Length: 167
Ligand SMILES: NC(=O)c1ccc[n+]([C@@H]2O[C@H](COP(=O)([O-])OP(=O)(O)OC[C@H]3O[C@@H](n4cnc5c(N)ncnc54)[C@H](O)[C@@H]3O)[C@@H](O)[C@H]2O)c1
Image (cartoon, rainbow, N blue to C red):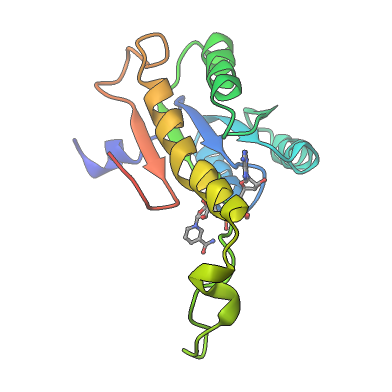
């Protein structure tokens, strides 16, 4: 495959989780500017609405769907809605994620007691694992079912930004 073809996203149907702001939204802009059709999923409805309105002002093909990526069933319904609406799904950017709080070292290299293992509540650990790890697995596994994979590409393309797992 030529590099030019590798970066050609014109006409592709792209799903971005956590697309209402930050990296997800920035990727959405770049993809839309290059002719992709983008679906943004996010749990923050207000922020998502704003992003969709602003991106549509650019005259681009964008759609938003409010969903919590840790809700497996809701996620798969959102993926199905995208496929039903656009007829295909070519690329998924499993990007939704949350901050896990301070690390055990501060920026100056000293120990930060707030980041010590014993200071991390179970509820935060569970939320980070559910959001940053498990949801990526379920998002990517979900789109691999025959109904959801575009027949026009040899394999669908995936991107994960929490950088914990990739295929
Ligand atoms: N910004 C960085 O320097 C950096 C570095 C390494 C990794 N990352 C990872 O990249 C991803 C995006 O980072 P960012 O800086 O753009 O974050 P951000 O906080 O600006 O945006 C994250 C988006 O994900 C959404 N989100 C969070 N939990 C969700 C859930 N359960 N369901 C649906 N949407 C949810 C938020 O509403 C938000 O719109 C995160 O996974 C982050 O861990 C970021």
